[in-house]
Length: 243
Image (cartoon, rainbow, N blue to C red; front, side):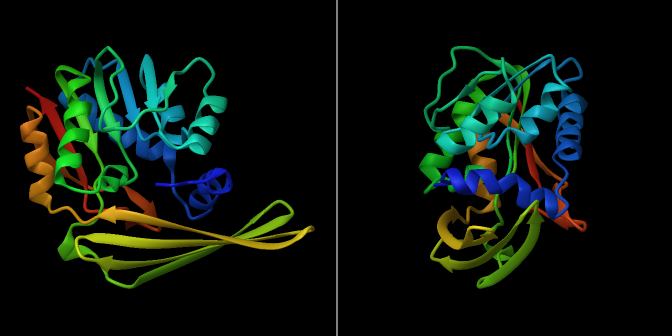
């Protein structure tokens, strides 16, 4: 995902104003981890974004770290979490030289992988950073049969002396989703717009399961996280245990 500096600055504000509860989501994920590995004390958050989940995980685990390739997102995460390592690597080839009790990848980020080979590479890299018996939690994008072609959404928030609108439109292009994200920002200096296009792959459920199994993890799909007003953020959470 591109996520320029201005998008990174607005990203968390928009989702918080829509009712997204990063703290509760982190608690749910921690519960999944500890139901499978009660003694889990360390966690790596891959594609950690601005660090909102990671900040909550820091209160739930003895040791945490993050991986975030987008500069604007990573800089915000590092600023809010002094002393926590946030690495700027690609999820397909990162190597931190150590393992964790849990690795998580939330926010549908893994579906930014362009094809099955890259999905396999990303899941394998995450699994390679787990101890034996460690837990991998991955939040997928919608499966092809569940995706609504042409879906539009929008939200407006007041942030101090400025008003921000975020409008999205998602269309299917073969086995991918192309999502246009348009921001309009109004403040005392004027009104400006910017647009980013995100490409997310519509992997089948079986593609994720196969990637986990090839990475040496037993896997199941459990209940989804909730975004706002009880609306699910996706089809569920793939939760695996490294054999």
